[in-house]
Amino acid sequence: MPMGSRSEDESCTERDGRLTRVGFALARDDGCIARARRYAADFLARLRDEYGRDVSPHTVGTTQLVVSELITNALKYASGPVVMELRSTGAQVEIIVGDNDPTLPSAQPTDPDRVGRHGLEIVRAVTQRLDIQRLGVGKRITAFIALTGGPSPLERPC
Image (cartoon, rainbow, N blue to C red; front, side):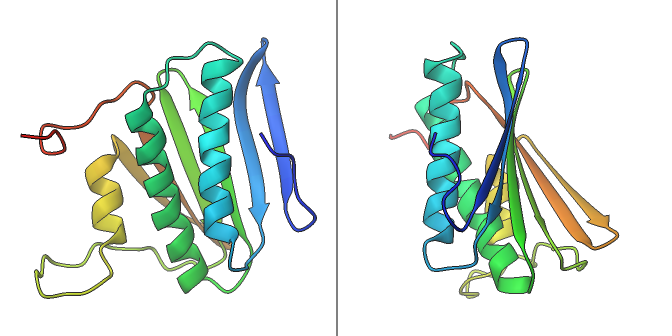
C-alpha cells in the first residue's frame, strides 16, 4: 500500500500479525477521490495477499464505489479536513469517513427525474449496514461491506 504522500498522512495498525486498519487524512485536491479509491483497493489487496483473507473482486469494486460516494459528499458539503479509515473486522471491511460538517445526510425521496444526489441511496443499497453519527465537530459515516460478498441477483447478467 502506498505510504502517505507529501499531502496526506497514513496510519496503519496491525494486531496479532494481521492488518486491522489503515487511516488517511485526505488532501482536498483534484486527485483526492481517485487516491482514496486506490488506497481502498490496496488495503483489500494487502488483506488478501499478505494476510490470507478471502476478499472477493465484487467487494473491491463495491468498496471503491462506496469510498467514491462518501468522499465526494464530504468534499462537497464540508469545508474542513476529510479523513478516511478502513478497518478489517471479522468478515467485513468498514469504511469510515469523517468531516467537519455536523449536518447529517439523508436520502432524498425517490424521484426518477432527479439528476444527482443519489449517493446515499447507492451506499445504502450496496452495503450491509450504514451508521451515521454526529460528532462534536462534524460527523462520521461508517459503511459495512462483506469481504466475500458477490453480486446481488439484480447485478448478475441475465
